[in-house]
Image (cartoon, rainbow, N blue to C red; front, top):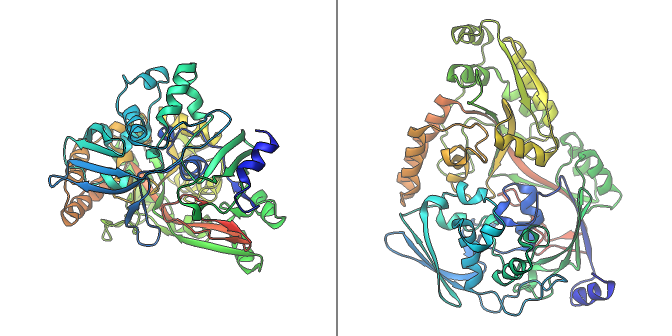
Length: 522
């Protein structure tokens, strides 16, 4: 893009540029393919809009690209009325000839639903979201009733349907742009040269370095655009993020080492913003690998991990010990669930009963960079390694670049793997259970665990519209999870950012994503 074009685009906006230190490179910019917080920040919450969204204060559903909606009495039919006058981004690679309408909504979801759809055949990608959300089993039909009315028909009542529509992966794409790419034989460009309706317009991406955005002067909610430019400075090293913050090279960081936070809190130039997060850090056991296929072994490994030490040392006390696969912030949480007491002598005896009196060896994978659910991955792995060594289990610590880490993990190459689940998808209990569903075995089910009684119970809960009845079912599901131990829940973290005091309007999102809508600079 030329300087003249850039200046013209930004002329109507405040002449402000904000720099955000992002901890990793995104895997791309096609929302249907994304499923982690790094991707959601770089694409979902910056470039795109969803039909509906959560109010960050009340967590109530509120309009976005849909202004209102109706639900049939049987919970199977959802009708959305769409916002008029919404513009898609005008970029060097796409000049829209019409406003957003129902055709775009149908294209977005039909592409994920129908593998025989022309764009999907030309660019045969899978959407982790479509499976994780359960939409693959429930969405029967998507129809445009008129240019500004869309109807979704489900094959059964599905309680999380509306919450899942707030997920960044449910962001709306341009059908017109997709048709242009298809005609040009370049459908994969949808992942590299994105076009959305969101508050910022994609300008340029230099892998592992920077992502550049312009403020969107035509955004349907002008109050959300208070910057002419937004820069993501990709900075995996948390210490380097802190240095960039201090030298004004970054205005917002999200990966400060926890030991640095007290000094940053005292610094008059910065604000420390934190809140409990819809998130959990956990250790997945690949149950397809021996001896982890034996539940007795998994229970022993879980039993000896010193979670309190991890909270004290790795999180510096800024987290809560996890027991359930979902956090206390989430409705339906089982407050009665408890871990077994740590007992190394008992653990060695149980391991011998399982056939491993001398222990065994395996790999322990850990993340290459900090996450809110694991602020010091190497240290966490070393604590677990030390605990297991006391019962004769030798763990070799392994790591990869983040994108490679996820890809290899989804293929099941690991034995054990430190990872996490965030509530950025929907704020519903299914968010924390669906990663362990059988349909997610090739995706985010890093435990590769498929347990039919668990699956049937969760299916029943999802089809139940009454929250009290759903809660009872989720309490039962958490007990099954604890008995089967496909993973060890480790920590319920706080989501935090360190922000230059010149930044205005920035807020911590309990769903663990980053949004610059409404953010400005003094």
